[in-house]
Amino acid sequence: MTSDPASTADAVEWFDNHCHLTTLKIDTDEVVAEAAASGVTRMLTVGCTVDDSKRAIEIAARYPNVWATAGVHPHDATDGTAGLADLLGSPEVVAVGECGLDYHYEYSPRSEQAEVFASQIQLAHENDLALVIHTREAWADTFAILDQQGIPPRTVFHCFTGGPDEAQECLARGALLSFSGIVTFKAAEELRQAVKITPPDRLLVETDSPYLAPVPHRGQPNRPALVSVVGAAVSQILGLDPADVARLTVANGRRLYQL
Image (spheres, rainbow, N blue to C red):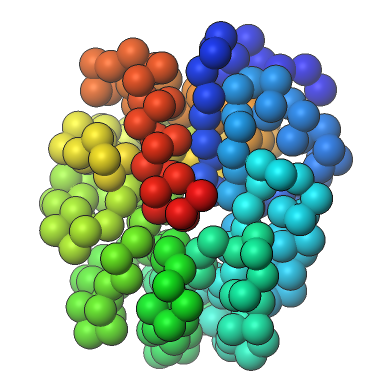
């Protein structure tokens, strides 16, 4: 695999603050090396079940520039969170999640999603960790549970897919917004409007790889090396130089995850 010229910028560092190295069907050493050649100096590999979180931690332990989360995705809420708390003391773990609500597929009943989400919010509080939220077609209930449990001071809505109204609700609660390759999709105008109202200190970029490859890489497996393509799209929306977006998103990610 070779680095994509469009995703490489001289002396610019990027932070892919949400990827899934456990599910990429490419050798991890190759993925990390390609990312480094493309200026990606930090990566966060995200757990979606207890077993997946264990694998994420194992991967993070192998690389000095990769950290992990431990969490249970709403799709897997029926499996519960047994054993999750035991992972949170690992030095590689910097956040709880991804967790939240997903009413698009409803692979787990809504009641179980809500219970598992609430329990992970409390784990973030108890362990002074960041919280990584996944929400899809469940904004009202997501906000209601956060308000009831108390939103952790370091919280990010990953792969944000709402419009300006949802962005304002997240921002009012002190959360950061992380934008993925969806910002490059033709039909995502509402999302681009959300980018425009996001304060510079609340902005992050991610690949969510191997999913959601940005234009012009649609149809290919996504990978961390392409986070600069996302960053370039965000910079165009904001009228900023990509290097400035790179610097501020790296700084925001380091602050969020206390790196």
